[in-house]
Image (cartoon, rainbow, N blue to C red; front, side):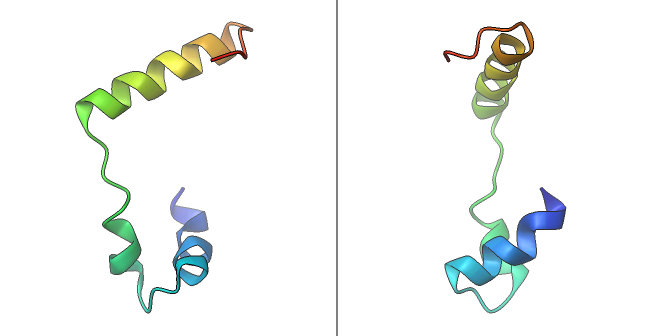
Length: 48
């Protein structure tokens, strides 16, 4: 993710990375959802 942050920042028209990082906040709820989706994907169920 960090490697792609400059490209995302440019795409969004931000003048610096700090303006883009505001959109990348992970909450416990989002982390849980991401974990579940990855587990389904890794288990072979790609229909999330």
